[in-house]
Length: 314
Image (cartoon, rainbow, N blue to C red; front, side, top):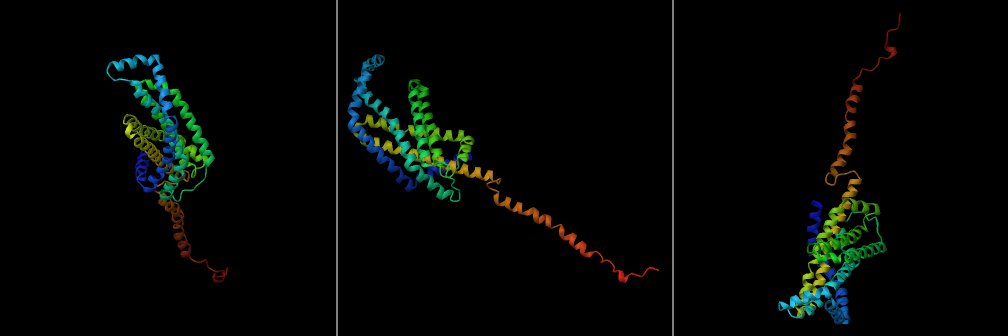
């Protein structure tokens, strides 16, 4: 728990550094261009298609008529843009995650390693290609799990549990690999995954909930159409900053766990390492001390008498 909280506040403090804030803007530019491009070419068609699907649904027809009876007017005209945004949001979250993993994470890992772990050996246990393959494979698995779990979102408690759990699992898989790729060997990375799986998954779930929070900004952009082009880029930047915080949290935790693992493998305690060196050097000196009285005792023995000094035998 100490390592978990220590890495948390360190990650939060690092997010205030100008270098981290500047790095969070780089993926934002890519995501803004992607969102504006998709919105320019496909927004009207997507909204019309979604509205046609909502109107054609016999299951929802009674719901729309019931809501209109309460004086809400054309409900599908409001729900269609909202459904489009909710459908596109996970895609942009995935793109944001991959952008942070590919563009920001190496820079953030280098920043943490430079400031906290300058003497930590780099064993190069994961290459860039391996990181990309791992990230893409984990993302595909998360998307499959997301699509399969969509029907369960209709159950009120599960809609608050399943999406953050899936995003947390994805964040945990991607961020830990990238945080340890440069410093840990493959065996060390697997050992850290095994020992700290529950804590790392907990970090992923917390950051998954943090990543779901900016969806409120997305919904506000739909409700307040005049501020759409301000709120949506703001939401994308919040997503990126949340993932940057996630990357820093996993990096601080992972590198600290790696350092402890190596100290443990060396047979030393992290805090009492200098004392262990002194203790290791102590026994030889202590063992050599009793030799001094023996030497002095040998020196005090009387010298043997010479045969020439002895009286001749009669």
